[in-house]
Length: 399
Figure 1 (cartoon, rainbow, N blue to C red):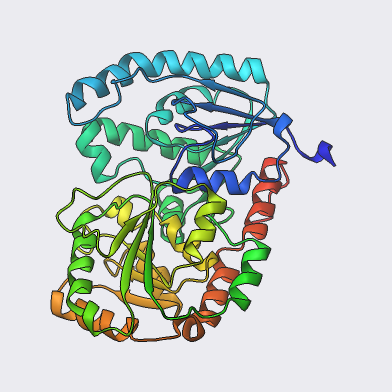
Figure 2: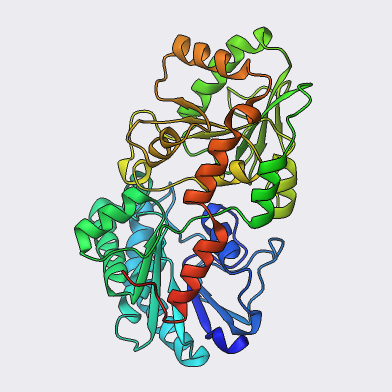
């Protein structure tokens, strides 16, 4: 059986136990891969192992502390990384390939990992599979790294996609966009998924007691303006609902200093490992997934897809989706009747829609069948994992 698992090197910016939705997807997909045949290359070192991903060996082309572009001197730092660090990191990656001799490389072209990956892999003589989770040329990266530099990085990411033996993308719009621009087609949409026991849980979960309306938000709040609008609308209707409302925040960032944060009905739980997060989410009533309403960052808004959406389905939570109608999130949410779709920021309209939705005492009963249909159609972890493993084994499905 072990012979069917080639030695695999995962190559990306983040370490095996990084927080966030992207790393969580990789860990879920790798859950059956033998540790002694799993290697890792990244730009950041491991900070802790609490998410439980073990590897046979991990090599780090470390970006020096304080050099990652941020608000202070972002252009200077980016120049140093592109002109000096990336060349050293390319040599480091080539040395890693010689040391580990992987049979296949799983590439996730994330931010500063892209230049060394693109410089080393196409000529390395090793088969590689590319998964695009997020585009490099988002608004945030453009502001931090500079527009010309981000354009160069985005072109290199496209190269890693087109030169791969097999490839996948994180959303249907992204897959279509990549195919149109590169001429290369994804074998599947790869994202987080529901495991068999989670499908069983979703099918049999009982409705809550109604003692509290608990609205979960998992992960970093990317669009704080929209989140504040949601909080404002919710605060207007709290006293008109059948039970007290609480917003439950799960993630590595604290928002207690924000003007919209009210500790009397908002609770922070920190960045929980997958089992603890799943257990905590199951105690909630709804899951909230916001994206930008004004499409200010279309390269993120229209093509990335929030992992929290799948986490909510796995926990049996109907979804409150808020975002621009053309966003990947809203296109998915509007294709299935699994919660509430909010596409406007007008306070009166938002409050009216939330009042109608949250007055439902048994939302899971209302939306369960569509949640199951969405999960089975779009987010079956076993099916996704099988296709990925076939690609890594050089047995990709026929196109």
